[in-house]
Picture (spheres, rainbow, N blue to C red):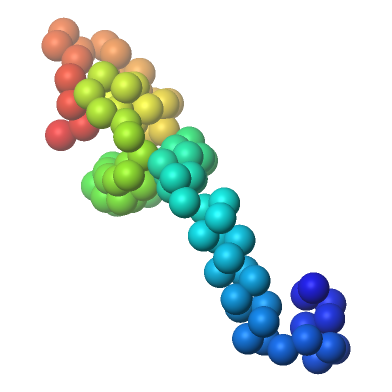
Length: 97
């Protein structure tokens, strides 16, 4: 279909309707899974913790993650050195705040 669109064998309006139909048919109810996949791909990398927290909060919205599961996922996504420091503290955090 994309090849036909490129050589103008079909109109853009028809492709748009087709893609909208696909999204409606298969995209509904899958938003949570898309957010979970996005969250699991997230890594802190070279970002500051503040930048990472903002990105994590954006990614977690709509994922269904809450409570302890949210904290564990947050720890998995942060840099290893910071995670190690959190393990060594007497009272480890119980929330991402």
